[in-house]
Amino acid sequence: MNNSRDNNTDSNFVCAFQRELCNMIVECCSQERTYIKFYGLLGERFCFIAKAYQEAFDECFATYVSTTVYCCRDLHFSSI
Image (cartoon, rainbow, N blue to C red; front, side, top):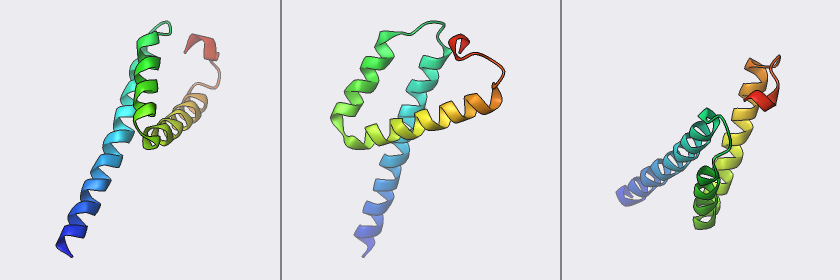
C-alpha cells in the first residue's frame, strides 16, 4: 500500500517536471528577438522521448497563446 502511494507521488513529480521543462523552453524562446532553431530542436527531441512531452507542450502553447492574446490584444503577434 505504501509503495503505491510513493509511485503516485513520483508520477506526479515527473508530470510536473515535464510541464515545467516545456514552459521553460517556450518562455526562453519567447524572450528571443528572432526564432532560434536550438529551442525548436530541443523541444522536438523531448517530444521524441515521450508522448507526455507532446501533451505538455500542447498545454503550454495553448496557455501561452491565450495569455498573450488576453494581455496584449492590441499588439501584433509579429512583434512578440
